[in-house]
Length: 115
Image (spheres, rainbow, N blue to C red):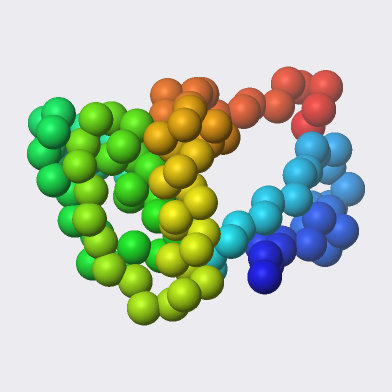
């Protein structure tokens, strides 16, 4: 089951009518981190072919970041639904089908017309 992180209509109501672009963000785990964040950690603390261990694997973000950067990975997770999600993300990472936000992609800055 997927959960919606925020309701765009409620957020719009709290921004005093400013023109802002919204998109719904769907996460498969309540504490799913961006892959780019974990990639920075993996790259700063490991070398190629090192082992990365995640004791709370969740949806497999650490696995994705590790595999994309030529690291081995292992982890533990007790929830079957998250194991299935992580397995799917691992398969997509290995096949090159995973869709992630690029690590160094700049943060969107609205123009004066959009504010």
